Figure 1: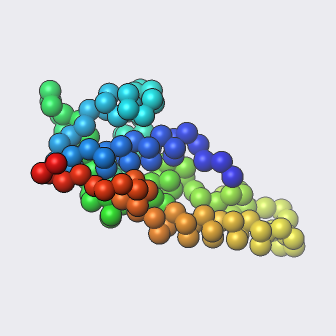
Figure 2 (figure 1 turned 90 degrees about the vertical axis):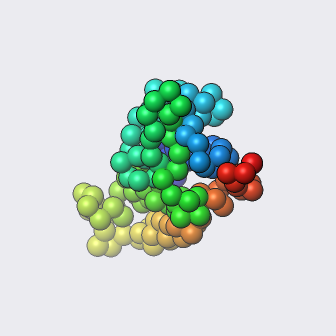
Length: 141
């Protein structure tokens, strides 16, 4: 299973925010440069991240984005689910999906369910702070 660039870039950008002073907004241009991501593409991703309450924006000359919650309170799985739509590796596991003509006697469904469960377990327990993997800056730094 491959995740899209939306998830990759969204998580990279959020982790970049963790490494900045949480009290100060970071311009999207700075994040885009640090992470070598198109600023226009990042703008589209940040619209969704803001609507979902992961980041907040500050307008003005010294504006930008900052995390809306502490990094320890943001679950990576929630971010990926927002940006991907689902963590299901197969369409037949999406509850609102079209289903599968083989669902009744599917011999591989257990495989896909186990993969989905492993993904959800891994991402559902990891916080943004953990994903950042580095000491968090404080306002005094």
